[in-house]
Image (cartoon, rainbow, N blue to C red; front, side):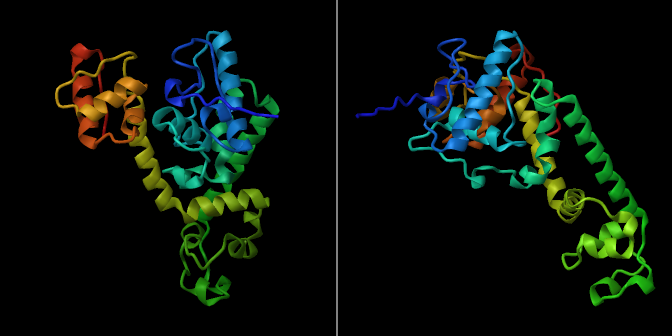
Length: 283
């Protein structure tokens, strides 16, 4: 039996996976040029959610690439397109440290709750877990290591220091401190997240700063069906923007072949009040 597959061009979709040419048509899966069951399932989930929201006359749910691999997958497809089967490799995400498996609920549970996919009970359990995590961190901040408790060479270097900063030492595990003070004991899931949060705090904060700046660009919406006849914009950028019609400045910055100077031209252009975009950004 001869099988054939229709490959559509995802550059013609909005980030909701609704086609730009046919309103109300949502497309997902291998027809978008992706490969793999997980990739297809992720697109199907988002297309289904947004089709339902469309029927309810609600805004679409667009997961940012800074908070989910699904967001990276869809943003890549609708912004860059693909000339070969697309697989969702973790290396495609710029903010992988922010996409740890143990923080998936922190990043995504609110989205699921708002569209009715997360129950009230599960949502409450999430807040209880976050409360436990913060309580352990607070105990670590106020507990100091006494000389008689330093039983190893690694611990002796931290006498009189608070436990929170001791955890940052790569040669010390949180479990070592739990053995000293059983009040710090909690479930394996809680302790693992607390330890990772503290050990990578510096890197995480730097990444959050980059994400904040990128989020500012997400706020700068670009008009649909715009001709991009703007002085200073390169011909390549103009042609690609007209073809892709990016939804915002952040998406425009990720289009292949676009230079930083092109994004600066757009930023200056849409900073002009007569172009109906008012900016108040701390970039």
